[in-house]
Image (cartoon, rainbow, N blue to C red; front, side, top):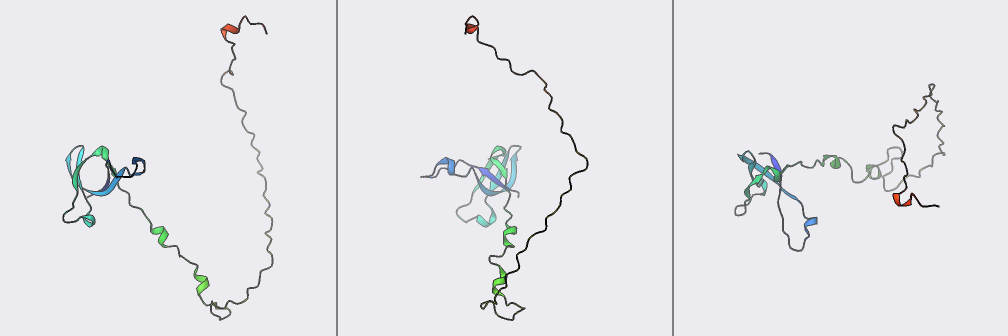
Amino acid sequence: GELVLVRRKLKKKGKTKKLLPKYVGPFQVVKKVCPTTYLVEDLPAQRKKKRFRRFNAHVVQIRKFHPRDDAEWDDWPDEPEESSTIQPSSGQPAGKEAPVAHPVSFQPTPIQINPPEVIETPLQPTTTRAGRKVVRPSWMKNFVA
């Protein structure tokens, strides 16, 4: 029962091959028919009584299926919760907002960065071979400029 994607040549009318998915699935591996071929079938949730896909797939056509992990998006709230709660300091509901005093302009204190005490000198680049030589073509050797 491992989940895999299978490469199939899809033909959809009105769609170009470039935009069609290369792999379809996921499918469930049923058994190993031979060293290079596996029998795959639809997932149990996608099976229907009359329409049921079960076929052999070569190992070159099979790729392991990695399900998406969307759990990180479920934790994010859609709206901030602060706007709909009662403010405890004033005791007024959120619909009637208390006047907010603007804070005094805050200026960050400058941070002094001490330079490193040991100054490293960068290494000089070394040339490992001679530069390019420009050679005139043979037909220009007798040419007087």
